[in-house]
Image 1 (cartoon, helix red, strand yellow):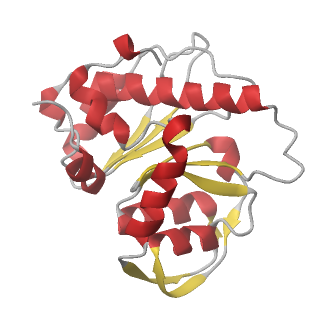
Image 2 (tube, one colour; image 1 turned 120 degrees about the vertical axis):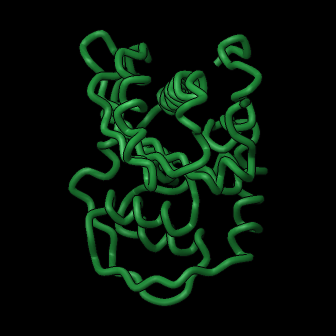
Length: 223
């Protein structure tokens, strides 16, 4: 995304979400070090992968981004015991071809595992996918942060973002933990927001999770 597309007040919040290829290795290293510092108690049954990821985000405070095709008809295995966030996520993804791509210590997107030989998806397509993720994140955060009364970063927000035929957000599903009164206004702020056509193979609706823990760590919207 060109720098001109991002308002200065969003840069820190974007840092918890937006994938930047040049910083991927450093971000992953930071995530490993940070994740080793805390362990969480798990006693979860086998369940749909989407549900497990929602619970994981709520427990650990990590922000996740993935599209619907990545979790459709997939399950996460049962998990019991104490694990770091990173180890727990690896166990939840063990039966899939997905891996966590960290963009900051507590922000990640799910991407196909790199195989040897490489997966048949061309590198250009992967770059297009990451660019589209960045565009989606930027425009959603821009729209939400433009509404100070929404208090983005003060509570956990889970968004499922369908696009209409004009590639604008339509009929978003919103869950605002602890602030259900804001869900209609969040939905209103996103309705009709133009995103643009996704690259081939990008599954919609996309899921975007914004947690207060990550917002506190990296900064939220400019007030």
